[in-house]
Image (cartoon, rainbow, N blue to C red; front, side, top):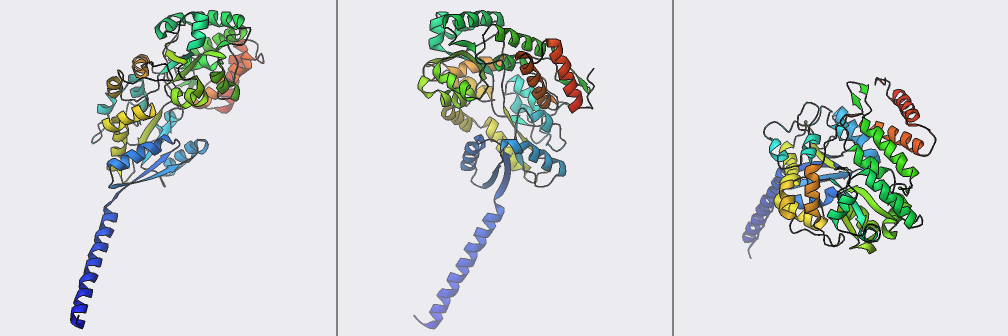
Amino acid sequence: MTKSNSLFVFLVWLMLIVVLVGCSSSSAEDKKELRIWTFTDEAKYAVEKFQEANPDIKVDVLFINNDNYVKKLMSVLQVEKNVPDVFFVEKAYWPQIREIPRLEDLSQAPYNAEEILDQQYQYIQDDEKDEEGIIRGLGYQGTPGAFYYRRDLAKEYLGTDDPEEVSKLISSWDKIMDIGERVVEESNGEVHALANWSDIGSVESSNIKEPWVVDEKLVIDPVRVEAAELAKEARERKVLANYESWGPAWTASMQQGTVMFYAMPTWALPHVFENNAPETAGKWGVTHGPKAFTGGGTFLAMYNGSENKEVAWEFMKFYTTDRDFLTELAKNEQYFLSNKEINIELAPELTSDFLNGQKYFAFFNEAGEEAPSAPQSTYDNDINGLWDEKVNDFLNGRLETIDDMIASFKKDVGHHFPEIQVD
């Protein structure tokens, strides 16, 4: 090959390389980006599926330990620096976050999120809106509650393990008290009806009519007081096993069969019972208790100063409305959705071996329709902690009467929140 031919070939290759590099650089620059903050590893599954469906979007996910998450999120929202485009918020903290004036108004165009809310259960819709009724976030998880029960214990002490029959037998707290008293006697103290007073509190707290604070005044809903009195009665009649929630004795009881009923939401099936009692598959059922209730949940919100709102909205829609993804999520992860339309479609076919073949999506869909909407103020999460401390003091005799408990509670609220009118 002559020198001139060699030079020509070299120049052609050089031009080709320049073109390819330019295209690659242009492609990288054109790729859309999305920054997400989360406290839950649930996000990993959703992000992977979202990127498979949207390869032109680069997603950067930052996982922050739950203990530090809310503090950091509120901090960046306040100063408006390094704010993610989309962020996850646990229900306990959502009332505080959704009132911060940094969240995008999803009621307006181009989002028109009301169309998504129409596909959801009413109790979730109520939570997604701020005090002015503006949609500030989207819930992707359905969390109606159930009374999970050991079928073997139900057969032994109630004579049936049929969910509908068991539901009739525990349709009031009085009935549960009577069962619990009888069971602890017949089992020589080895079996209790409930694990601890939280099984009562979690149900009743979903049925309040007033949050802790209204117009900067402390409000003690009568339902909360009744729940404390019920818990005291249950303690005295030995209906409660008195295991600390999430403690080793509590988790061990699920495997050992020392508790008949646990009041827990949907996500407890894969994350609590199957994890803690894998050898008891087939020995469980779910049924309705004295009242409908919910437990937990997570919301997605968007920063109103984001430069990637279009992409952020695509992710939020994907997690709440994409039929293929949500169907796969429900089937593969036993994940009960906020989208009731898809839940209804799946209800006839989804069963659980752990629940002895029970159609659990059909059950939870019914429970979701009945679930109440409990109002929450921005103070509720903190004041809940103070109330729980006082109820424990009351149950353990450190506060002798319900009046003593309420007086001590009011004193603590006034101390921690001087801006709230206590009396």
